[in-house]
Image (cartoon, rainbow, N blue to C red; front, side, top):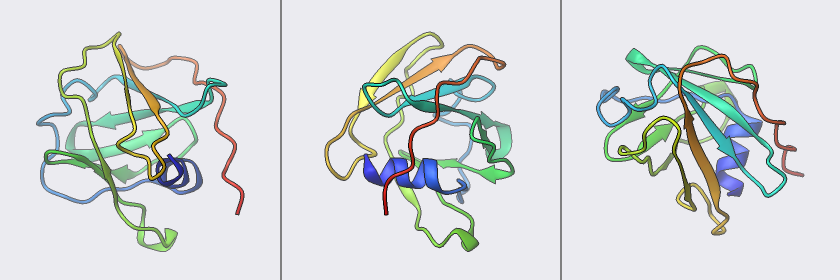
Length: 130
């Protein structure tokens, strides 16, 4: 989880790669809610066609790619590396699943798809201590 939270909460997210909508059709145009702890803290992510990424933490203009895994690459000036993890291609809007695939320490996160946009985002996670 530290890798995911550090990448997602402390850095702007970007991705490189050629594969975009295939496998991510369930996310494009919807709200993807990431809950990172038992307190319900998290953020909302917005995947748009063509690989455009933004989130409820105010990061915009980033990109994403999917090719068997979802990969997120911070911008070069962020000083971080690409993080890749699982994506549930079969999850429908209204559904949720848990994964530790974004975690270095086995911590589970909950990923939900909310239909459409305009939802009230959850409380942002506390940035990890350095």
